[in-house]
Image (cartoon, rainbow, N blue to C red; front, side, top):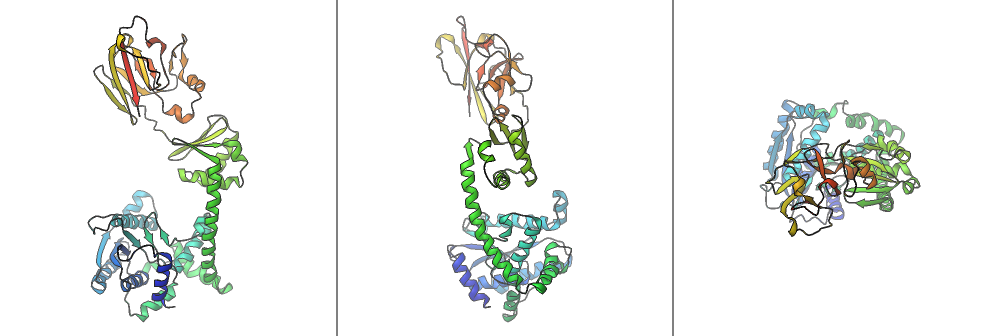
Length: 453
């Protein structure tokens, strides 16, 4: 294989929309043969490139040998080299990660910082990361994802272009044998990572044992798997189109909430796949699919939750909503205060003579008998057991029952705040004032409280 010619052709076909002349690339270089070959290729094509090397300090002297080797490439290729040292062991322990996952998080976090670093050049926004993943890496990733039980997307293996994270992997067309052959033909130097020979790492075991064993039965196994990756990428496009079509039919967006008609969802097939595609974006796990389906026949108000969201049944609907903080903040409002900030909203208080007031029907405004108000007021979230006398009623009513009458969803209930005066609820904010504090014919002063946001 003519690696350089194929590289140029592949770039023109896949990445021609990215101008080499007006773009700066961050090239991830470990010092291994793959990254050295990619550096050689992009240099020959005239890329503006900064070399980035991670020292994870995991292999003793070998880690420093690799760093020094990469630094020497600055002279060979006339490219700026930047390095970063990581305490990978400590990071892994602190975050309860495997060493491999810790190293991955550390390096990509740093690469992202470099992509957005104003000090590197004025080309911020026109900067991409290049990595030297190749066809063998792609095959191994496919098998790892298959055995882990991922969905269709996992079987598409490594994406050539990650637009969101600005990552390009232009060497995925080449087998490692072709890369090594190119390095030898061009008399390139590189360093070997001794950990690549250790079978304790899943990827290495697949590389050293699983694929060679499969080749004894299926001679063209690697070619076939690469073709499958291409097929899975096309299948994934069709799959996503079908999912988007179903979600558009099923989901109604209301503010921050997603409302899904249970009866309509029950009729959708394949239901488990559709449910998963809906909930996975909100930190739910595959193991919770059955729990969501059980909500179809559960009591009203039943729910399950993830780290960030809650799915609850509200009559004929499933509603996905962000979790609301359980914080029961108590905010005292003194008589002289004119503004109070809370939960991304603001209360504006004003007192004036009754002869000057005009009726305002807005639910965001409370007009109260100032003579009946005792300061300081208490602003807080409602809690179970709260009651008040709704305007126009002479009997008290629990807020929980009042909310049922108002047909509030579980999420709407969680967002309700109240104002108290001397342990008596004055206003259920945005819903109803208490009858004991309404304006009377003899009222001389009016307290106006308005909520914004």
